[in-house]
Structure formats: structure tokens, C-alpha cells
Image (tube, rainbow over all chains, first blue to last red; front, side):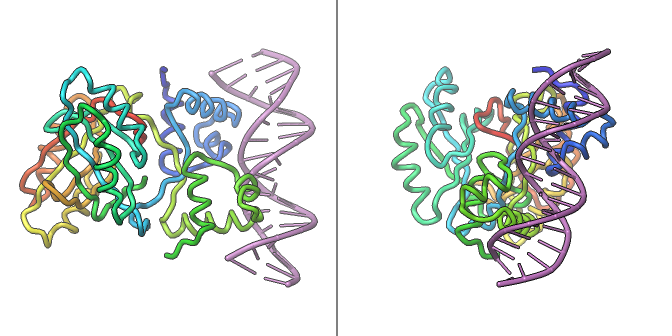
Length: 144
Length: 144
DNA sequence: ATTGAAAAGACCTCAAC
DNA sequence: GTTGAGGTCTTTTCAAT
């Protein structure tokens, strides 16, 4: 999908925080209907989504962590990334350059959630040959 | 700030995607005004924000990366995290457990953006004694 | 903190360009 | 793809509990 300058203008306004269509229309000198049509297009193309994000600092019984993994064979990278992305508690997965092949962001119960994720969920993904976990102990400007 | 069950119900509805107050009110058996007051409280306390997120896969000239750093002294962790969080292109920073002390998420220009960030921005933060970069080559369920 | 009613405002439909 | 006019739905205000 091709994004033009108007699309980017709308995106950058909405990325800073929700604004209604009329306000955006006034800022960009366009009609409300145009803004609405553009936003609809962007959402339907899965380019943009509008939703609530929480500050993980306030999540008392939840722990945010990164799980960095190595995969047995490079040709499996995409399928393994998809498999990990489907596991419970996984927020997102990326294929990475560098020391690790895949890096996942997980939100688990503070108590035994991470152990459970590693032993019961991630262990079931064949071809993931090692993992290293990083707890996010305190975050700045992080919303999930 | 203390969050009760109603707050969490509202958050989990809005996290899945924006819904209007009346719809949420009906789902939870409360009035529209109550939902609105709760959302206002959550936003003002910086617990929740509602905004647009973009799929980094569609950002043709931007590159998402993680920068994992070590800090000279543990007592500096929080101040260094704040300093890094203020650098341009930095989306978020976390103090981490494990091999690294700080992990930042950055969105840089594909061309020379990462080199420029490392040599011109991060190098200016004293006390950050090493860094390792991971390019996010392909992401699943990741929105920034 | 929650509610109901009324007013203000935002959003949607549709016909036209 | 964009627009304006009109109708509908959502949000805001505010007095009361």
C-alpha cells in the first residue's frame, strides 16, 4: 500500500494521541469525510490501528520481558517467528540481526509466569535451540 | 493509583481496539457517564493512553532496532535510562535484568540512521560503556 | 463515584463532482 | 478521492443521589 503526504500527516497527528476527525480536518485543511475515508483505508490495510495502551509500570502482577532466541536453521526463521507469535502471553516477535535470531516481547504473571512460559510454551516450539530472558525491571515511555 | 475490576474491564476492551463509551457501558452494565469518568481518570493518571500505532513493516525508509547497553555503575541506571529516553529516535527504554543493563527501542532512518544514532547521540551519554544493536528485520504483531 | 436528561458535537450516508 | 448537507449516534454538561 502506498501512503501519501496526507496519510502521513494523519498518522503523525493520531500517533501523538487521539483527535477527532473534525479537528484533524481543520489542521490539514481538508473535509471531515476525507479524513474519515483515509483513516478507514489505513485501518483496513493494517497499516494503522487505534487502541488503548497501558503503562506496564502500573501492572502490579504482570512482568514484561524480552525473550531472545536462536533457531536451528535460518530457513525456519519465518515459520518459527509465527509459531512463537501465536503462543499465549506473546505480544510481538521480530526476526533480528545480531546475536539472536528472534526476539519476543512477553507479558507474564509476576509469580511463576515466566518459568511457565519457558517450560510449558516456548519449549514446545521445535527448532528454537536456546533462549535468553531479559526482565524489564523499570521502563520509560513504554506502553504495551 | 489503585485500579479496580471495572478499570481493568475497560482497559481490556480498549486494548483490543477502540470502542465507544456506550458500547463499553452496555458490555459492562454501567452507564455511559461512568465509563467516560473512568477513562478520563486512567488517562490523566498516565495509566492508559489511546492513540494510533503503525505497523513498522510499512515504514519504507525507517528501521526499527533494539539497542542493548551496559552502564558503568549500577547506581547510574535510572539517570542513564532517562538520558537515553530523551535522545531523538528513542521510542522507549527499560532497565533490564540479564546480560544488558538498558534496552532501548529506536526508530531510525534506514540509510545511515543507526550509525548516526550510535555515533552522534548515544556516544554523548557518559557512563554507557558498551552497546549492541539488533535490527528488527521482520516483525509479527508489532506496532509502534 | 454514578446516574439521567438535554445540549453540543462527531460521525455517517449519500448524491455530486 | 473529495466534498457538503442532512440525519443519526456519541460525548459532554450538569443537577441530583
